Length: 272
Length: 349
Image (cartoon, rainbow over all chains, first blue to last red):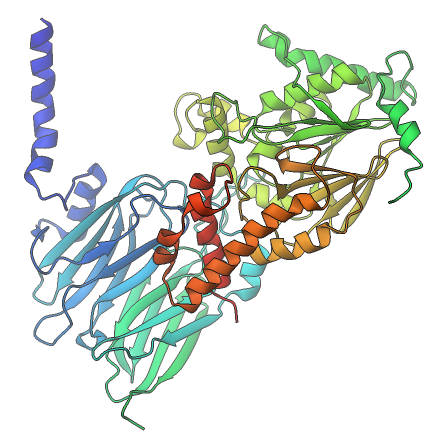
């Protein structure tokens, strides 16, 4: 009797685990992801191995769930012939799982984003690269973190409000040829609206940066569609091709349609 | 050394004084009876009595219960912060109420062992759950109790529903109200703090009868709503979490702000200091030194990393909790402090 029951239980488990075991380690299933991938990509195939897989770096255990560093990078430089058009950042078990969508151009040099996110509970974090040929490539990492989204917006809300909209746009020194690294820092509380006031029973109004557009000499480098999954004071590292020098411009728009712009002149060694 | 003219009267005030009637008239007597009735009600409802928290008399009339240097867990019931009370000739002021309503009730029972005078104030030193979720125990006992906190405390409480629910879940081992479930409403009620109705913006004096507490709210430091309580009679400083001893300090406000506040805090002419976490009987202001060293080293390490253009991830990875001078719970909080320091200091210059 007991043996029979065990066998039945075992049989019931096979369909759930069978797929998971068959897949590469980089595509661990989760109920949330099974649903999301259909919504985002229909039944298009998604590669979980091969040379085009994005590199995804997140800590296995986050020191602070409201500020979890994430780095996504394509393994190859952009070119007209072959480039990453879009990077999707998905956090399976967040209240709003599609955390950000980053769009690139051949002029981006390398599809790369370094940022920080809020993570609500233990979850897979996924980066999906969509190439110019329409192919999809997925990297996944499991992160132990909890409480980032419903965490209070900031340690010092008064200071956050006072500084809202300050930008810093910096370009790294050219240490090598090829795509240069740059970084955009934004002062913004980026509130999720998920923290309820227990006394009034009202939720705070969400107020976050929803779009970042970076261009160089008037040509697109990076366009990001964002959610409150991005941490307070949103921060984006990215790359671009400096060419013969010119102006790098970042434009930031939040959910109140407040817009902020920052520009920096980029000098290229060997050019005046 | 400051002269302490009130020392003798205070010693008398601290004594158990059951024989004397309350100083005010009938109204207060009725209120006090209501306190007593309320006190026994919750225990009676649950079919048991409330055990009084063990207390230490840190100074005449100043009673402190020491929390453990542990994460909140069912084994400790969320009893991890230093909490207590000050007894005046007219009434009692509670300074922090503990991590759960149950701890608040046990604190109330501890007060009743020592005095019949009513609790007139519950002062919260800041927003963290281990210091204020016991407030409910004093509200249920007496609707007239005033709850006192920094002018920035109500907003901080309002933003922390999920934090308090998670804290109650950790302390009781019950499912978090935040996940729903059958007992979610009860769990949510346990986790609903009583917010302050008397707000301190700068300084305030509370008269306990023959004994005055000097309250002071501070600029953003450990949190953005830190408040200290100075008992002038015994020259005792309740530092709240502006002072950690033994347990690693947690930066949940501003690292630079905290270091600045430490500089000012050390000028308080205290004879006794009660840290938010840690031992009693510390020498003052030397008690500030280990914490100041930790925070100074933290700032220096992060500024060095920023100068070297290290990323947040690299800086957190390089942090070693074993190398921070033996603070307890460093493994759980040091890297978080590094994160907090990094995102604050990267905007410097």
